[in-house]
Length: 198
Length: 291
Image 1 (cartoon, rainbow over the protein chains, first blue to last red):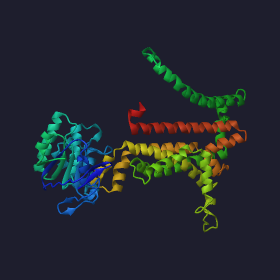
Image 2: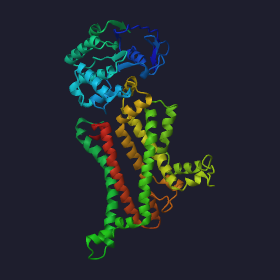
Image 3: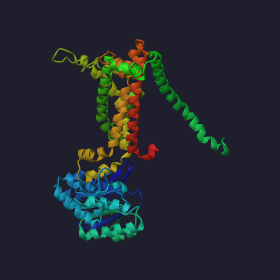
Protein backbone atom coordinates (compact mmCIF):
# COMPACT_ATOMS: atom_id res chain seq x y z
CA UNK A 1 0.00 0.00 0.00
CA UNK A 2 1.12 3.58 -0.63
CA UNK A 3 -0.11 6.21 1.82
CA UNK A 4 0.33 9.95 1.83
CA UNK A 5 -0.83 13.27 3.15
CA UNK A 6 0.05 16.57 1.48
CA UNK A 7 3.68 16.36 0.38
CA UNK A 8 4.30 13.26 2.56
CA UNK A 9 4.36 9.88 0.79
CA UNK A 10 5.16 6.40 2.07
CA UNK A 11 5.42 3.52 -0.38
CA UNK A 12 5.59 -0.30 -0.22
CA UNK A 13 3.76 -0.76 3.08
CA UNK A 14 2.56 -4.30 3.65
CA UNK A 15 1.04 -5.34 6.94
CA UNK A 16 -0.89 -8.42 8.02
CA UNK A 17 -2.50 -8.28 11.46
CA UNK A 18 -3.94 -11.64 12.61
CA UNK A 19 -7.49 -11.43 13.97
CA UNK A 20 -7.65 -10.95 17.73
CA UNK A 21 -4.01 -9.85 18.05
CA UNK A 22 -2.51 -6.52 19.15
CA UNK A 23 -0.12 -5.03 16.61
CA UNK A 24 2.05 -2.17 17.79
CA UNK A 25 3.51 0.25 15.25
CA UNK A 26 6.63 2.15 16.21
CA UNK A 27 8.66 4.72 14.33
CA UNK A 28 10.14 8.18 14.33
CA UNK A 29 7.94 11.29 14.32
CA UNK A 30 6.75 12.04 10.78
CA UNK A 31 7.27 8.52 9.42
CA UNK A 32 3.56 8.12 8.67
CA UNK A 33 2.19 6.16 11.63
CA UNK A 34 -0.86 8.39 12.13
CA UNK A 35 -1.43 8.66 8.36
CA UNK A 36 -1.42 4.85 8.24
CA UNK A 37 -4.01 4.63 11.04
CA UNK A 38 -6.16 7.26 9.32
CA UNK A 39 -5.92 5.28 6.07
CA UNK A 40 -6.99 2.08 7.85
CA UNK A 41 -9.94 3.96 9.40
CA UNK A 42 -10.96 5.36 6.01
CA UNK A 43 -10.27 8.99 6.88
CA UNK A 44 -7.62 9.11 4.15
CA UNK A 45 -7.60 7.19 0.90
CA UNK A 46 -4.53 5.12 0.08
CA UNK A 47 -2.60 6.45 -2.92
CA UNK A 48 -2.22 2.87 -4.13
CA UNK A 49 -2.84 -0.64 -2.89
CA UNK A 50 -5.67 -2.43 -1.10
CA UNK A 51 -6.98 -2.86 2.42
CA UNK A 52 -8.75 -6.04 3.50
CA UNK A 53 -10.55 -6.71 6.75
CA UNK A 54 -11.13 -10.45 6.77
CA UNK A 55 -12.18 -11.25 3.22
CA UNK A 56 -13.74 -7.85 2.56
CA UNK A 57 -11.96 -5.32 0.37
CA UNK A 58 -12.59 -2.05 2.21
CA UNK A 59 -10.09 0.09 0.29
CA UNK A 60 -12.73 2.54 -0.89
CA UNK A 61 -15.36 1.99 1.84
CA UNK A 62 -16.35 5.06 3.88
CA UNK A 63 -15.29 5.03 7.57
CA UNK A 64 -18.80 4.19 8.84
CA UNK A 65 -18.84 0.91 6.90
CA UNK A 66 -15.51 -0.34 8.26
CA UNK A 67 -16.59 -0.96 11.86
CA UNK A 68 -13.30 0.34 13.25
CA UNK A 69 -12.99 2.06 16.63
CA UNK A 70 -10.55 4.95 16.46
CA UNK A 71 -9.02 6.86 19.36
CA UNK A 72 -6.85 9.76 18.17
CA UNK A 73 -3.97 11.14 20.18
CA UNK A 74 -6.05 13.97 21.68
CA UNK A 75 -9.07 11.66 22.31
CA UNK A 76 -11.37 14.25 20.64
CA UNK A 77 -14.33 13.88 22.97
CA UNK A 78 -17.40 15.88 21.91
CA UNK A 79 -17.37 18.83 24.29
CA UNK A 80 -21.06 19.65 23.95
CA UNK A 81 -22.11 16.19 25.14
CA UNK A 82 -21.92 14.52 28.54
CA UNK A 83 -19.61 11.54 29.06
CA UNK A 84 -22.67 9.27 28.81
CA UNK A 85 -23.77 10.88 25.52
CA UNK A 86 -20.21 10.59 24.17
CA UNK A 87 -20.11 6.85 24.87
CA UNK A 88 -23.69 6.34 23.70
CA UNK A 89 -23.06 8.29 20.46
CA UNK A 90 -22.11 5.35 18.18
CA UNK A 91 -25.08 3.38 19.53
CA UNK A 92 -27.59 6.19 18.99
CA UNK A 93 -26.25 6.59 15.41
CA UNK A 94 -26.93 2.87 14.92
CA UNK A 95 -30.45 3.44 16.33
CA UNK A 96 -30.15 1.14 19.33
CA UNK A 97 -33.07 1.22 21.75
CA UNK A 98 -32.80 3.39 24.85
CA UNK A 99 -32.59 0.32 27.11
CA UNK A 100 -29.88 -1.29 24.99
CA UNK A 101 -27.86 1.95 25.00
CA UNK A 102 -28.22 2.24 28.78
CA UNK A 103 -27.11 -1.35 29.29
CA UNK A 104 -24.15 -1.24 26.91
CA UNK A 105 -22.86 2.11 28.19
CA UNK A 106 -23.17 0.89 31.76
CA UNK A 107 -21.25 -2.32 30.98
CA UNK A 108 -18.39 -0.59 29.14
CA UNK A 109 -18.21 2.19 31.76
CA UNK A 110 -17.79 -0.46 34.44
CA UNK A 111 -14.99 -2.14 32.50
CA UNK A 112 -13.26 1.21 31.99
CA UNK A 113 -13.87 2.21 35.63
CA UNK A 114 -15.59 5.45 34.64
CA UNK A 115 -19.14 4.83 35.91
CA UNK A 116 -18.87 7.78 38.28
CA UNK A 117 -18.05 10.11 35.34
CA UNK A 118 -21.08 9.38 33.17
CA UNK A 119 -23.05 12.53 34.04
CA UNK A 120 -20.07 14.87 33.77
CA UNK A 121 -18.99 16.84 30.70
CA UNK A 122 -15.57 16.25 29.11
CA UNK A 123 -14.52 19.75 30.19
CA UNK A 124 -13.22 18.91 33.66
CA UNK A 125 -11.86 15.40 33.01
CA UNK A 126 -8.22 14.56 33.69
CA UNK A 127 -5.98 13.17 30.92
CA UNK A 128 -6.42 9.59 32.10
CA UNK A 129 -10.20 9.93 32.44
CA UNK A 130 -10.39 11.44 28.95
CA UNK A 131 -8.49 8.49 27.48
CA UNK A 132 -10.75 6.00 29.28
CA UNK A 133 -13.89 7.71 27.98
CA UNK A 134 -12.50 7.81 24.43
CA UNK A 135 -11.64 4.10 24.68
CA UNK A 136 -15.13 3.31 25.98
CA UNK A 137 -16.68 5.25 23.08
CA UNK A 138 -14.51 3.40 20.55
CA UNK A 139 -15.30 -0.02 22.05
CA UNK A 140 -18.98 0.28 22.89
CA UNK A 141 -20.17 -0.68 19.40
CA UNK A 142 -17.92 -3.76 19.35
CA UNK A 143 -15.70 -2.85 16.40
CA UNK A 144 -13.76 -5.44 14.39
CA UNK A 145 -10.58 -3.40 14.82
CA UNK A 146 -9.43 -0.87 17.39
CA UNK A 147 -6.99 1.83 16.20
CA UNK A 148 -5.22 3.68 19.01
CA UNK A 149 -2.94 6.60 18.22
CA UNK A 150 -0.45 6.98 21.09
CA UNK A 151 -2.99 6.02 23.78
CA UNK A 152 -0.47 6.46 26.59
CA UNK A 153 1.10 9.77 25.58
CA UNK A 154 0.95 12.86 27.84
CA UNK A 155 -0.05 10.90 30.96
CA UNK A 156 1.57 10.98 34.38
CA UNK A 157 3.35 7.81 35.56
CA UNK A 158 0.48 6.48 37.70
CA UNK A 159 -2.19 7.08 35.04
CA UNK A 160 0.15 5.71 32.36
CA UNK A 161 0.53 2.48 34.29
CA UNK A 162 -3.22 2.26 34.99
CA UNK A 163 -4.23 2.75 31.32
CA UNK A 164 -1.52 0.34 30.20
CA UNK A 165 -2.92 -2.36 32.56
CA UNK A 166 -6.43 -1.57 31.30
CA UNK A 167 -5.35 -2.14 27.68
CA UNK A 168 -3.61 -5.39 28.61
CA UNK A 169 -6.76 -6.57 30.44
CA UNK A 170 -8.91 -5.61 27.44
CA UNK A 171 -7.16 -8.30 25.43
CA UNK A 172 -8.91 -10.95 27.49
CA UNK A 173 -12.14 -9.19 28.49
CA UNK A 174 -12.97 -7.70 25.07
CA UNK A 175 -11.21 -9.74 22.41
CA UNK A 176 -10.64 -7.47 19.42
CA UNK A 177 -7.92 -6.82 16.89
CA UNK A 178 -5.94 -3.69 17.71
CA UNK A 179 -3.42 -1.51 15.90
CA UNK A 180 -1.60 0.70 18.38
CA UNK A 181 0.84 3.48 17.56
CA UNK A 182 3.48 4.33 20.14
CA UNK A 183 7.00 5.73 20.52
CA UNK A 184 7.78 3.77 23.66
CA UNK A 185 9.43 0.35 23.34
CA UNK A 186 8.46 -0.72 26.88
CA UNK A 187 4.81 0.05 26.11
CA UNK A 188 5.11 -1.79 22.80
CA UNK A 189 6.45 -4.91 24.53
CA UNK A 190 3.72 -4.77 27.18
CA UNK A 191 0.85 -4.29 24.73
CA UNK A 192 1.83 -5.90 21.46
CA UNK A 193 1.64 -9.44 20.18
CA UNK A 194 3.71 -8.13 17.29
CA UNK A 195 5.78 -4.97 16.86
CA UNK A 196 6.22 -3.28 13.49
CA UNK A 197 9.01 -0.73 13.00
CA UNK A 198 7.95 1.92 10.44
CA UNK B 1 16.57 53.57 20.38
CA UNK B 2 14.60 53.30 23.67
CA UNK B 3 16.42 53.05 27.02
CA UNK B 4 15.33 50.73 29.81
CA UNK B 5 14.17 53.73 31.84
CA UNK B 6 11.58 54.58 29.20
CA UNK B 7 9.62 51.39 30.02
CA UNK B 8 7.58 53.28 32.60
CA UNK B 9 6.08 55.28 29.71
CA UNK B 10 5.19 52.12 27.77
CA UNK B 11 1.60 51.69 28.92
CA UNK B 12 0.81 55.41 29.33
CA UNK B 13 1.91 56.09 25.73
CA UNK B 14 -0.15 53.23 24.29
CA UNK B 15 -3.15 54.09 26.46
CA UNK B 16 -2.95 57.77 25.44
CA UNK B 17 -2.95 56.91 21.73
CA UNK B 18 -5.83 54.43 22.08
CA UNK B 19 -7.75 56.87 24.27
CA UNK B 20 -7.87 59.44 21.45
CA UNK B 21 -10.11 57.12 19.42
CA UNK B 22 -12.15 55.96 22.42
CA UNK B 23 -12.62 59.63 23.35
CA UNK B 24 -13.77 60.46 19.82
CA UNK B 25 -16.47 57.75 19.96
CA UNK B 26 -17.61 58.87 23.42
CA UNK B 27 -17.78 62.50 22.21
CA UNK B 28 -19.76 61.47 19.10
CA UNK B 29 -22.37 59.65 21.15
CA UNK B 30 -22.32 62.29 23.90
CA UNK B 31 -22.91 65.07 21.35
CA UNK B 32 -26.06 63.32 20.07
CA UNK B 33 -27.40 62.86 23.59
CA UNK B 34 -26.49 66.44 24.56
CA UNK B 35 -28.18 67.81 21.43
CA UNK B 36 -31.39 65.94 22.28
CA UNK B 37 -31.43 67.15 25.89
CA UNK B 38 -30.57 70.71 24.89
CA UNK B 39 -33.23 70.90 22.17
CA UNK B 40 -35.83 69.42 24.51
CA UNK B 41 -35.10 71.97 27.23
CA UNK B 42 -35.20 74.85 24.76
CA UNK B 43 -38.50 73.77 23.21
CA UNK B 44 -40.15 72.98 26.56
CA UNK B 45 -42.69 75.50 27.75
CA UNK B 46 -41.85 77.61 30.81
CA UNK B 47 -42.92 75.83 34.01
CA UNK B 48 -43.75 72.56 32.25
CA UNK B 49 -43.34 69.43 34.37
CA UNK B 50 -40.61 66.91 33.48
CA UNK B 51 -43.30 64.49 32.28
CA UNK B 52 -44.68 67.07 29.84
CA UNK B 53 -41.15 67.91 28.71
CA UNK B 54 -40.51 64.22 28.11
CA UNK B 55 -43.76 63.85 26.13
CA UNK B 56 -42.68 66.71 23.86
CA UNK B 57 -39.21 65.25 23.43
CA UNK B 58 -38.32 64.36 19.79
CA UNK B 59 -37.37 60.83 20.84
CA UNK B 60 -40.97 60.30 22.00
CA UNK B 61 -42.74 62.43 19.38
CA UNK B 62 -40.84 60.81 16.53
CA UNK B 63 -42.27 57.46 17.60
CA UNK B 64 -45.73 58.84 16.95
CA UNK B 65 -44.89 59.45 13.29
CA UNK B 66 -46.40 56.76 11.10
CA UNK B 67 -43.37 56.76 8.75
CA UNK B 68 -40.90 56.19 11.54
CA UNK B 69 -42.98 53.42 13.10
CA UNK B 70 -43.14 51.74 9.69
CA UNK B 71 -39.35 52.17 9.33
CA UNK B 72 -38.76 50.56 12.73
CA UNK B 73 -40.99 47.59 11.83
CA UNK B 74 -39.37 47.12 8.42
CA UNK B 75 -35.90 47.45 9.94
CA UNK B 76 -36.62 44.75 12.52
CA UNK B 77 -38.12 42.48 9.86
CA UNK B 78 -35.51 43.00 7.14
CA UNK B 79 -32.51 42.83 9.51
CA UNK B 80 -33.80 39.59 11.03
CA UNK B 81 -34.57 38.07 7.63
CA UNK B 82 -31.20 39.06 6.15
CA UNK B 83 -29.34 37.86 9.29
CA UNK B 84 -31.09 34.49 9.11
CA UNK B 85 -30.26 34.14 5.41
CA UNK B 86 -26.68 35.27 6.09
CA UNK B 87 -26.29 32.51 8.71
CA UNK B 88 -27.88 29.87 6.46
CA UNK B 89 -25.31 30.72 3.76
CA UNK B 90 -22.47 31.61 6.16
CA UNK B 91 -22.37 28.26 7.97
CA UNK B 92 -21.63 26.03 4.95
CA UNK B 93 -19.49 28.68 3.24
CA UNK B 94 -17.41 29.28 6.40
CA UNK B 95 -17.02 25.53 6.87
CA UNK B 96 -15.85 24.94 3.29
CA UNK B 97 -13.39 27.84 3.46
CA UNK B 98 -12.06 26.69 6.83
CA UNK B 99 -11.59 23.08 5.72
CA UNK B 100 -10.33 24.23 2.29
CA UNK B 101 -12.76 21.80 0.66
CA UNK B 102 -14.34 24.30 -1.70
CA UNK B 103 -13.26 24.09 -5.35
CA UNK B 104 -10.96 27.05 -6.06
CA UNK B 105 -11.22 27.97 -2.37
CA UNK B 106 -8.59 30.70 -2.61
CA UNK B 107 -10.61 32.47 -5.32
CA UNK B 108 -13.85 31.88 -3.38
CA UNK B 109 -12.21 33.25 -0.21
CA UNK B 110 -11.30 36.49 -1.99
CA UNK B 111 -14.68 36.77 -3.75
CA UNK B 112 -16.61 36.41 -0.49
CA UNK B 113 -14.63 39.28 1.03
CA UNK B 114 -15.43 41.66 -1.83
CA UNK B 115 -18.65 43.06 -0.26
CA UNK B 116 -16.58 44.04 2.80
CA UNK B 117 -14.15 46.19 0.83
CA UNK B 118 -16.39 47.38 -2.00
CA UNK B 119 -17.89 50.88 -1.61
CA UNK B 120 -21.54 50.36 -0.49
CA UNK B 121 -22.94 52.44 -3.36
CA UNK B 122 -21.15 50.21 -5.85
CA UNK B 123 -22.83 47.12 -4.34
CA UNK B 124 -26.23 48.78 -4.76
CA UNK B 125 -25.43 49.83 -8.31
CA UNK B 126 -24.17 46.34 -9.19
CA UNK B 127 -27.36 44.78 -7.81
CA UNK B 128 -29.44 47.23 -9.80
CA UNK B 129 -27.57 46.40 -13.00
CA UNK B 130 -27.74 42.64 -12.32
CA UNK B 131 -31.53 42.76 -12.03
CA UNK B 132 -31.86 44.33 -15.47
CA UNK B 133 -30.83 41.07 -17.10
CA UNK B 134 -32.16 37.54 -17.56
CA UNK B 135 -33.40 35.60 -15.55
CA UNK B 136 -34.73 38.56 -13.55
CA UNK B 137 -36.53 39.90 -16.59
CA UNK B 138 -38.67 36.76 -16.92
CA UNK B 139 -42.35 37.56 -17.30
CA UNK B 140 -44.50 36.05 -14.56
CA UNK B 141 -48.05 34.68 -15.04
CA UNK B 142 -49.62 37.99 -13.92
CA UNK B 143 -47.84 39.83 -16.73
CA UNK B 144 -45.29 41.47 -14.44
CA UNK B 145 -41.56 41.00 -14.78
CA UNK B 146 -39.73 39.30 -11.89
CA UNK B 147 -37.43 42.25 -11.30
CA UNK B 148 -40.34 44.64 -10.78
CA UNK B 149 -41.33 42.57 -7.73
CA UNK B 150 -37.84 42.93 -6.25
CA UNK B 151 -36.18 46.20 -7.27
CA UNK B 152 -37.44 49.22 -5.24
CA UNK B 153 -39.54 46.81 -3.17
CA UNK B 154 -39.10 45.24 0.30
CA UNK B 155 -37.23 42.17 -1.13
CA UNK B 156 -34.60 44.60 -2.44
CA UNK B 157 -34.05 45.88 1.11
CA UNK B 158 -33.46 42.33 2.36
CA UNK B 159 -31.29 41.39 -0.63
CA UNK B 160 -29.10 44.49 -0.30
CA UNK B 161 -28.63 43.88 3.45
CA UNK B 162 -28.01 40.16 2.84
CA UNK B 163 -25.31 40.84 0.23
CA UNK B 164 -23.16 42.76 2.70
CA UNK B 165 -24.09 40.97 5.94
CA UNK B 166 -23.29 37.51 4.53
CA UNK B 167 -19.65 38.46 3.95
CA UNK B 168 -19.32 39.17 7.69
CA UNK B 169 -21.26 36.03 8.61
CA UNK B 170 -18.98 33.86 6.43
CA UNK B 171 -15.87 35.42 7.99
CA UNK B 172 -17.17 34.83 11.54
CA UNK B 173 -18.15 31.23 10.80
CA UNK B 174 -14.76 30.54 9.18
CA UNK B 175 -13.04 31.67 12.39
CA UNK B 176 -15.38 29.47 14.46
CA UNK B 177 -14.65 26.41 12.26
CA UNK B 178 -10.91 27.20 12.31
CA UNK B 179 -11.05 26.92 16.11
CA UNK B 180 -12.70 23.48 15.90
CA UNK B 181 -10.33 20.59 15.29
CA UNK B 182 -11.37 18.53 12.24
CA UNK B 183 -10.45 15.50 14.35
CA UNK B 184 -13.86 15.59 16.11
CA UNK B 185 -15.81 15.09 12.90
CA UNK B 186 -13.31 12.47 11.71
CA UNK B 187 -13.89 10.50 14.93
CA UNK B 188 -17.65 10.88 14.41
CA UNK B 189 -17.24 9.32 10.93
CA UNK B 190 -15.44 6.30 12.39
CA UNK B 191 -18.18 5.97 15.03
CA UNK B 192 -20.75 5.36 12.31
CA UNK B 193 -21.85 8.82 11.13
CA UNK B 194 -22.39 9.86 7.54
CA UNK B 195 -20.87 13.22 6.55
CA UNK B 196 -24.24 14.94 7.10
CA UNK B 197 -24.78 13.28 10.50
CA UNK B 198 -21.26 14.26 11.56
CA UNK B 199 -21.90 17.86 10.47
CA UNK B 200 -25.30 18.23 12.13
CA UNK B 201 -24.74 16.15 15.28
CA UNK B 202 -21.11 16.99 16.11
CA UNK B 203 -19.83 20.01 14.19
CA UNK B 204 -22.82 22.37 14.45
CA UNK B 205 -23.34 21.96 18.24
CA UNK B 206 -19.62 22.67 18.73
CA UNK B 207 -19.84 25.97 16.80
CA UNK B 208 -23.21 26.98 18.25
CA UNK B 209 -21.80 30.18 19.80
CA UNK B 210 -20.12 31.04 16.50
CA UNK B 211 -23.50 30.76 14.77
CA UNK B 212 -25.11 33.16 17.26
CA UNK B 213 -22.14 35.51 16.89
CA UNK B 214 -22.38 35.39 13.06
CA UNK B 215 -26.13 36.05 13.22
CA UNK B 216 -25.69 39.01 15.55
CA UNK B 217 -22.90 40.52 13.45
CA UNK B 218 -25.01 40.06 10.31
CA UNK B 219 -27.97 41.72 12.04
CA UNK B 220 -25.80 44.66 13.12
CA UNK B 221 -24.37 45.08 9.61
CA UNK B 222 -27.88 44.99 8.13
CA UNK B 223 -29.00 47.66 10.59
CA UNK B 224 -26.27 50.05 9.46
CA UNK B 225 -26.69 49.42 5.73
CA UNK B 226 -27.56 52.54 3.74
CA UNK B 227 -25.70 52.95 0.42
CA UNK B 228 -26.89 49.78 -1.34
CA UNK B 229 -30.43 50.34 -0.04
CA UNK B 230 -30.61 53.84 -1.42
CA UNK B 231 -29.58 52.67 -4.90
CA UNK B 232 -31.28 49.27 -5.09
CA UNK B 233 -34.35 49.64 -2.88
CA UNK B 234 -34.83 53.39 -2.95
CA UNK B 235 -35.96 55.45 0.00
CA UNK B 236 -39.71 55.54 -0.50
CA UNK B 237 -41.58 56.42 2.68
CA UNK B 238 -43.75 53.64 4.09
CA UNK B 239 -42.48 51.30 1.40
CA UNK B 240 -38.71 50.68 1.49
CA UNK B 241 -37.82 53.01 4.34
CA UNK B 242 -35.65 51.54 7.11
CA UNK B 243 -34.10 53.45 10.03
CA UNK B 244 -30.87 54.31 8.20
CA UNK B 245 -32.86 55.82 5.32
CA UNK B 246 -35.14 57.60 7.81
CA UNK B 247 -32.14 59.54 9.14
CA UNK B 248 -31.35 60.60 5.56
CA UNK B 249 -34.97 61.47 4.73
CA UNK B 250 -35.55 63.44 7.94
CA UNK B 251 -32.31 65.36 7.38
CA UNK B 252 -33.27 66.12 3.79
CA UNK B 253 -36.48 67.82 4.95
CA UNK B 254 -34.61 69.71 7.68
CA UNK B 255 -36.03 67.79 10.63
CA UNK B 256 -32.75 67.47 12.53
CA UNK B 257 -34.37 66.53 15.87
CA UNK B 258 -36.16 63.51 14.36
CA UNK B 259 -32.99 62.48 12.52
CA UNK B 260 -30.98 62.58 15.75
CA UNK B 261 -33.76 60.77 17.64
CA UNK B 262 -33.75 57.93 15.05
CA UNK B 263 -29.94 57.92 15.22
CA UNK B 264 -30.19 57.36 18.96
CA UNK B 265 -32.56 54.40 18.41
CA UNK B 266 -29.91 52.94 16.12
CA UNK B 267 -27.15 53.64 18.67
CA UNK B 268 -29.19 51.81 21.33
CA UNK B 269 -29.78 48.87 18.97
CA UNK B 270 -26.07 48.83 18.06
CA UNK B 271 -25.03 48.81 21.74
CA UNK B 272 -27.38 45.90 22.53
CA UNK B 273 -26.14 44.02 19.46
CA UNK B 274 -22.50 44.62 20.40
CA UNK B 275 -23.13 43.34 23.92
CA UNK B 276 -24.65 40.18 22.39
CA UNK B 277 -21.66 39.78 20.06
CA UNK B 278 -19.22 40.15 22.98
CA UNK B 279 -21.25 37.60 24.95
CA UNK B 280 -21.11 34.98 22.15
CA UNK B 281 -17.45 35.74 21.44
CA UNK B 282 -16.55 35.21 25.10
CA UNK B 283 -18.35 31.87 25.00
CA UNK B 284 -16.69 30.95 21.71
CA UNK B 285 -13.11 31.93 22.55
CA UNK B 286 -13.22 31.75 26.35
CA UNK B 287 -11.19 34.29 28.31
CA UNK B 288 -8.59 34.50 25.55
CA UNK B 289 -10.53 37.42 24.00
CA UNK B 290 -12.64 38.58 26.84
CA UNK B 291 -9.91 39.28 29.36
